[in-house]
Image 1 (cartoon, rainbow, N blue to C red):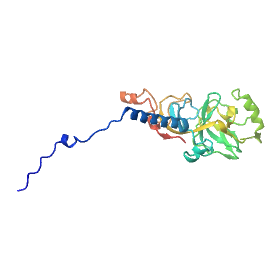
Image 2 (tube, helix red, strand yellow):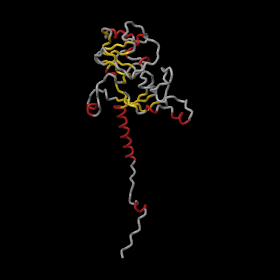
Image 3 (cartoon, rainbow, N blue to C red):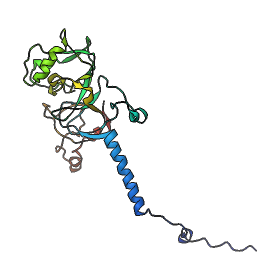
Image 4 (cartoon, rainbow, N blue to C red):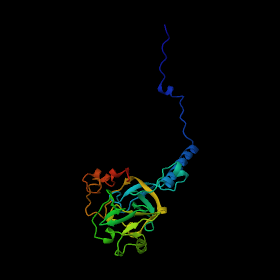
Length: 265
């Protein structure tokens, strides 16, 4: 007769030999330090957050959008951007972040690159002799402004135009068209009737351009001062705060959830 089978070991007996090694304090600190270094590298050289404070880029970017923008895409092609990170020149249609005197940083769309000839007729951009297709542009209601809608103007008629830019404008205008010089870019806001841009203060130098928006990572619902009515088919239905009868809906309506993780074009 064979020997009886041994009784199955209990759960504790089977796992009694297993040892869990908890990290030591130096290991925890080293891991934390590595995380901080990587985060600082990314924020310093690659990505940086930005909040949209004004309506000049509606409806592409809304007041209250939080963006991550790519700081390396337009960086001079050194060893880092050449081997580790993508680099490309600035193109028409790009949305760019650049240094400016008042305020210190602005975000607009590139309309003219070096060598382009452009004019604006009744609010429409004529680029190198042809009407520019701009599906992203919004023409929200605004009082008539001949200097804004017909550019370059023949006479100085808008006090908001920088006088120094007005003088420079005359030297780069040929046959009623503005010729973009080398190393300079002409930019406009997508909310064309409510944007202070190159029409008012001139070109953006290449060295002032620092980044390109990448993605909307959060969006706080804030009203736009340029809207006649807060009704827009391109806005999410959760774009208003405090009008829903349900408490849960009111609690979550502080953000534009549908805009989160939207890629910026």
